[in-house]
View 1 (cartoon, rainbow, N blue to C red):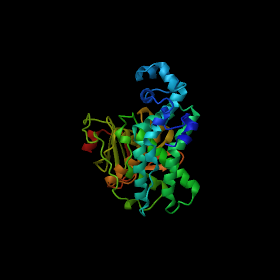
View 2 (view 1 turned 120 degrees about the vertical axis):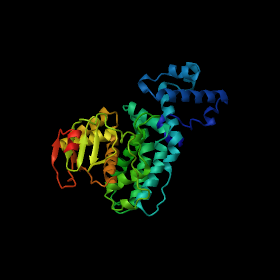
View 3 (view 1 turned 90 degrees about the vertical axis):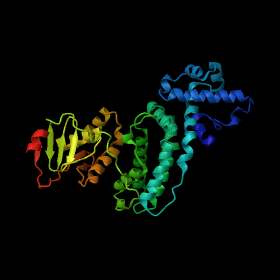
View 4 (view 1 turned 60 degrees about the horizontal axis):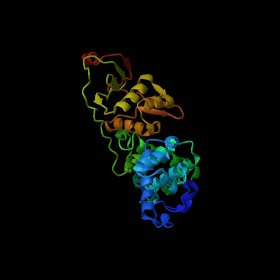
Length: 361
């Protein structure tokens, strides 16, 4: 960790775990106390922000007196800053890995994503990002995170994009890099630190596919290890009431409800409950704005900035059974349902037909 560059953010002028930080006293116990205090501060700040953070709570948890805490850190602001710097120290070395070119954009993007995820998926990063979100009013913390985490990743991704056609447009390259880093960050922080939603975890190969789709790259099929989308655990569960269920049919797509079950030309599409809910909304309404889609995600406690990952996986599940893309993106507005004709060439809309009646017809 570069102690000099960190000092303007944290007030720490030497690495916080360096024996030199207690060289003036020569007391190993002072260094041990410092480490225990920082560990206690970290534990408390996993679940609370600066407003409720107290030196007394740190002293109680670390097993030292308040006077000892104040001897090592002049106030709670200094302790808060030092504890956030300690988090960065744990994962920052992983941010600087160079991606060696292999001649294919997809493979280079995969390599970049593996390196980035190694850093962003650490508990230390999740805890630091949690502080940035909870204490958004602290300008120094936002700047600290942007300069030490986001900017290095953006620069590394821009270097990858520069190697390939279209990468000479600096403004477009920077915009792609910024959006892609936000996608990675959102994917690894979905849910809690130790129990995040598995359905939102983004793999390196998926990241490469999404970025190449954004770029309009034509060689996506050349990507190694085409990402496989696993069915949701309950995707093949039997309907709760197979006798009579609300139903919508639009062309080749049939949707039954309670619970949502989606089929394309009779083939079940293995959507997760959230994917099924979003798809049913778009299919039923025909077109839905982003604001309404985001409200559905928010109601299901999913981060709205993981929307792109969810839609990518939904589309891939249709593609994996031979269907066309059922969703059309209307730029700046939302999604439109794309009606694909069924095996008989029909695009007819049926609403309210029960599953039992449909089987008889």
